[in-house]
Length: 64
Image 1 (cartoon, rainbow, N blue to C red):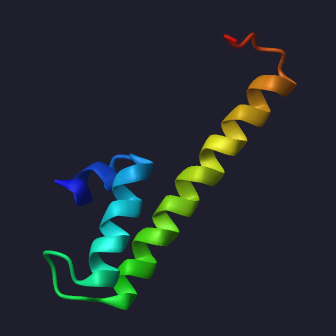
Image 2 (image 1 turned 90 degrees about the vertical axis):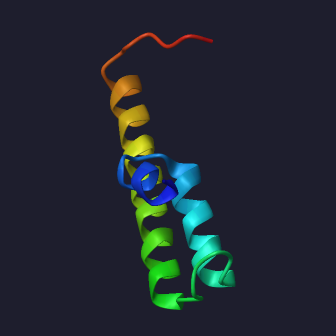
């Protein structure tokens, strides 16, 4: 389920899956897969940062 959540853009799931593969926790240890999920997590962060920048540049009001 965590893999599916990661594929659907849930940052924490990508991080958790990466840790699971890195440590062999419930799955065979696989550095390549761990790195793949780190990459997905980083991409989600980049997308979130871009969305935040666009919102502020366009003058969209934010709660706060």
